[in-house]
Amino acid sequence: MKVLLITIALILVGYSYLLALPAANQPQSVAFYQPDAFSVIAHGNGRALMPGNTLEAGVHALAVGADILELDIHLTADNHLVVRHDDIIDTTTNGAGVIAEMTLAAIQQYDVGFHEIDYPGLVGPDGIVVPTLESLFQQLPESRFLIELKPENTDAADRLCSLITQYALAKQVVVASFHSSVLRYFRTTCPSVPTSLGQTEVISLLALSVLGLTHLYESPGVSVQLPWQYGGVTFLTASLVDILQDLNLKVEVWTVNDPVIMRELIKMGVDGVITDRPDILKQLTLL
Image (tube, rainbow, N blue to C red; front, side, top):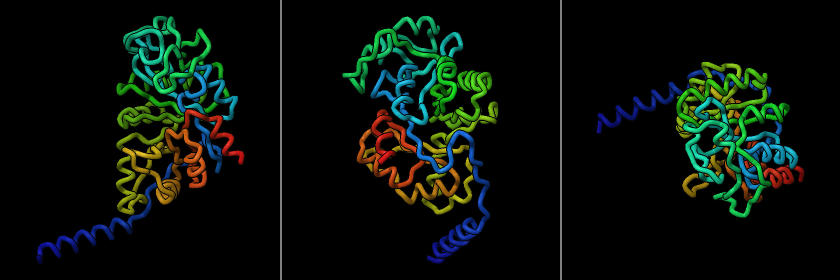
């Protein structure tokens, strides 16, 4: 019993010491985010309205009120970044193949939207192809992009940095990835482009929040994307949003298509919602 009491006392002393430590540096605000503005973020360029992750979907999402285009990228065999969620083309085109093993020309011979897993009733115009990221930069130069790096290797990160630099879009892009190692690499090679937090970085931050020690977290990113629910359990709370925003992090919630939940999140004060239905979300922000 004596050993247990000593152990508890040492833990309490150590915890008190951690609580007393000065706060870590917070991320600086970036031009990508408008001060105090809520962001309508079109998931896959608004994939419930047009075939997802296409240029046509991006144009349509902006027309119905999206503030930010969220999209995913992969690298082709001939070093082109294409906008696509999956690493294969089988799921939503009339072709088949692994993107990393195909040339851009081979990929673009197929139509996108031939069949759609999540939205089987969605039929887009004929002739829509898997677009390059460069085509979106060229056609939508005033837009803001939340770009998720899908590959775990660094080749796509290098190419992304090169394209952002070429088109001078560092202030219009935030880069995301589930792979924290890829984000760490990207931050080193492309320090002028802000990123969100990777999966392990989010886990570390949430662990500190449970312990009441988030003041010790020096965030390498400017935003955090969190699910509304995880494993069927409601994940996000108003107190967690406040904690993260106190660290000068933008809190963006994915993927929400239910208007009731959209309203709740807006009321909660999140900074943005990632949705397949930017048209619905935009209307709710106007009420």
